[in-house]
Length: 197
Image (cartoon, rainbow, N blue to C red; front, side, top):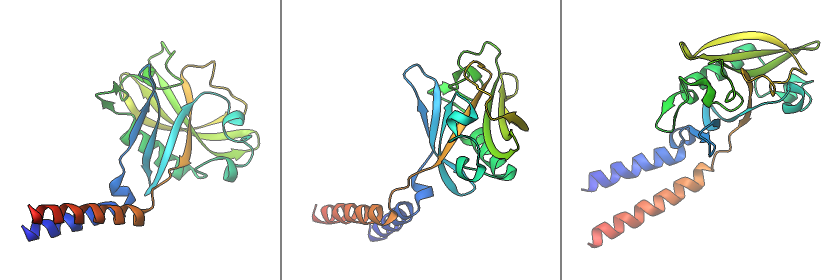
């Protein structure tokens, strides 16, 4: 019994002090069943939140005029990692929706009768052209393709139901020290209660 308590205590400390282990991707689904984003997406060891939004690069990314200030990812390699994270962690079929195989369930693509959706991740600027990574979906292929392509900064996805932007931000992670102390306190309370019964 003592060994089980020690094992539970060690496991809790590991989980509570490792923010990656304690946090899973949470899909954000609106009242109509559309996937609007996700929290806790692991991109190369960093947790991000992402929203799927329509608009132009200029309107969604602080003017879309300085890649370092405007975009979460500033190299093609990092943007590809982010696109792969969407494919692996977000665009998947769940009990809440068939987000991996039905492109029309992704916000910005929900008016598409085309059976296709491209989710753009901007990462670089060359003159008036924005380089984006497109995590692409079609009903036959599911979300499984990544394409690098240029767009103009003022191109607006609002009237085009086949494309939407992925707007990324670094996820806020709770203080591991606070969580660990709370967890240890609760485990200690549970162990004390168990030993008095």
